[in-house]
Amino acid sequence: MPLSWSRMSFFGSQKHRTELAEEGKDQEAGAARARRGGSRQGGNGTKGDNRSMRTQREDVADDNVRVPDRKQGMEAHGQERVTTRRPASEDDRVDLPSSSSSIPIDAQTESTRQCDACRTWQSQKEEMESIVKQRCQQAYQLDLELQSATKRLAEWEESYAKLEQRLKFSNAQADERIAEPMEKENRELRRVEKENQELRQVEKENQMLHDEGIKMQRQLEQLTKQSERREENLHKLQKLLESRTEELKLAQTFLTTADQHSIADVCHMVNQLNEEIYQCTMMMSDALIEQRRLQDRKDVDKAANRQVACERAELRWGKALVSRLQADVSTDETTLLESLLQHVLMRWCYEIVQSFSLESREFDNRFLALWDSIAQAYETPIAKRWLAITHSQLKSPIVNHSGIMNDLAILMVTGGWSNEMEGCQALPQKVLEKVRELSERASKIKEAIIEGILSVEVDVFYHEDGTLYDPSTMQDAWDIGAHSGAAGSSAAEIICSTGLGVRYITRDRHSSAGERGQGKEAVLKPKVLLPSALEVVN
Image (cartoon, rainbow, N blue to C red):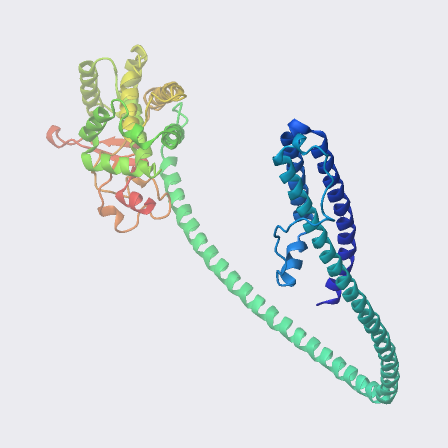
């Protein structure tokens, strides 16, 4: 058994003895109460005896709980003792009242049982005291062993201290013996370490020089590439300068102080009109893309009047181009949509500039035929003077914007626009304001061409869909100034015109009536959309 457990058993036995002494006193008091109760109660003795028996059973149960080793003690002695009823001796008899008839028989039997229980408890008490004595002796032996072990531990600690002192002395002697060799070795190590540091420094400087050389080589390569790009840009600028110089020489021919406006002024006004058209289409395409991001795809497909708009768009542009338009818009690509919107606005501005009357197509056709015959029969200044006088006497045409707004709406709805969404009702009003501004600019261009220039015949024009690309009269809207005249593009058919151009007209009045013709030379080339532009964008 371990030492700690023995000490705990010893102290536990002392506590146990105290509890046993208290329990003995409780048992004796209970037996005395039982005897007194039996002699007092007479006819009610059965009820008092039963209560005394319950008290005794509760005390016995408490004894079993507080002294769990009682049964173990009996098992240690081989369970030799068995509770049996024996005849009561003279010493065990209890003095009873002289008149036995006054005490019931059941009360006498119960009193006898209680006496037997008291004797049994007394014998168990003696056994427990014997066990307690044995435990005390064992605890005493363990205390002796503990004292012996403590003494031996002190001796070992003293021996350990002596050995530790001897070890320190030996270490000090060893340190003295190896101090001088270690000092020499340390000096040698410091010398080697210093040489290694110098070597590492040289290697570091060498690596820095190597990295610097690589850096200089890269910079040289970058400068070479920059020089090549600048030479290429210079070559492009030289070509552009030559082109602009040629255009300037061509325009210089028509600059005259006799006219209120020059051809250069007209070209500038047309360029501004084209730019305003482009800005308007950009506003519309941005609004469409923003709306498509906010609404669900199913809502786009089920938008009101979308099927009708698609059918009308297919009649004008063809099913293939409309399908391409819808596919591009679904991926937020608006190049084709913007080009078609520009064409619609450009065509509408062209009608304003060229027409005599926007209200009556028959009246307009008659005046156009009359003007063509006058221009062919008379010199340009005379014919232009007639045209200027006629235009000044005609009332300013009333421009109806419903047609152009309907054409724009067809393309927008085909692309997925819906006026049913919240916050989208403001776009039509903004577009209408832009359209009114464009109509005013077109009217000013018409006035400048008809009344402001009298020396030459100037006209605005565009190219119809499907016309073969001609770089001499057209300009690629998505490749300005760089590759507009490149080989390969001239064989393609244009999709549509996206801007107006300016040209002057010369008429051959000396030929016969059947051979009369006119020459046309572009001063400002109209911009066109080529299929290659859509391929590049995609």
